[in-house]
Image 1: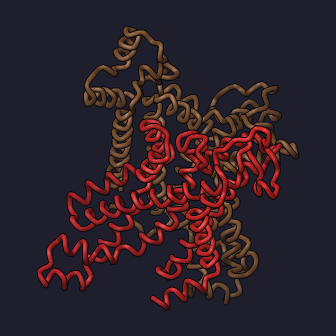
Image 2: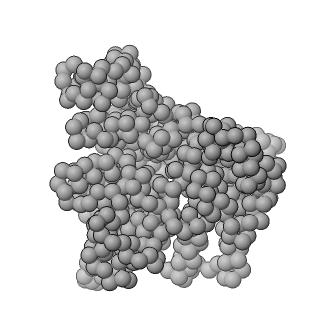
Length: 274
Length: 335
């Protein structure tokens, strides 16, 4: 474990990613208490450039961009982790069942996975969000529903490979039941690639959710969600580029952090995939 | 081989039906009545009843789905609640624009990502490699909608280098529609002015849409090349004194082609559905914009049509990739 940690920390990208994530987590946890009200409008202070009073300027309604971006960090990280938690739970369960039960069940579950895999994900997410009503909770649900097949395939492949290994045979010989073998022996050993994938997927989920909000199928104004903020301020790029750029940079840095983290984890946990 | 093909085509069919099934039942959880959504809040009782009868919305769910499937056999995708036209007609009108944009984005991705990946692998851990990796990381993390807004602002509004949204300058007469791909139609009509203008209009959205794919492709190509470059036969090729070009193209890239090919099939399919955001920003009259508007007005026959079309094309592309596999790697035989 310590050797793995040292190896992770020798990778400069991974260290940058980890550092960025810690900063982002601090901002998301403590930031909202330190900045002003993200919804407070001041029409006399519209589209003001960055100043000591408003370090990131103000938007078209005179709201403090910094306050909005900081509150947005909490939203986006919440959405990213929410999506990955839901999707990886569902996907892992399906993959575990498919690989563990085998035969007809495997076939049925994997064809189901194929269907969701071939689904144009953004369009499906739009349809779900439109059907359930556009809000953040439904965005999480929609993005999770289009991303779980990745985990299902990963876990199934792992289970199929592990099932024939000696430690599983040993467990079976000791009289362990099917359920026990699946949960206590196969699952923990199949989770490594899930962890690597999940760290990439948090970033991907944040991007997708921001895109959905941007076209109006996610968080609704005046919610300080980063994608929705870019949509609200995009027509002011000429007069006040900071208003759209700040939330966009928020997305970029967050996604970047998770991509770097994913690369670092993969290098450590799966040395082949370089 | 034939049996394999039949089985795979059957699977595409299954996926297609599965997609309609899922979309159909998502449509049923809509809290708003689609008839009210289409006719407006002030519609009279009998108008609504008549609308529901016309579109079969008054039948039991499974019956509605059965009817949908039966019509599907005749390639009838039902009627759009929003445009009032057959969905198949709408798709025919809007698909070519998306196809043109996705193909252009695909070309951008391949033209940028493939050489960048090869270059990075050849100069591993030196400045070209670091540069490519940095760019790939940044492009892959940038929200595509902001990239679009930023580039439109800089290249179009400030510098005037590239045209703004749309497919063709409004002052130009569009070439007669043959394929629906404006660039191709302009060439067919031998209208060089229109071709150049259409190409100019295509450049920015194609780059925006293709950028993330280019980044991904560069990373994958680099990884695949590194794997191959460390093999003994490549070292032999170098030792024989072959030119770099020979070693890279004939010995290395050809053998790194399989994982790259897998990615390419998925990329093109992903571009088709990923065009939604780009089309919205560039007022591109394609499927993405169509499905966005349809979803907003809860027009589910239209949404089902688009998802079905894109999903089936995606599956067919994957099938094509698997067949190309056998062509590229004689060791692979499908039974």
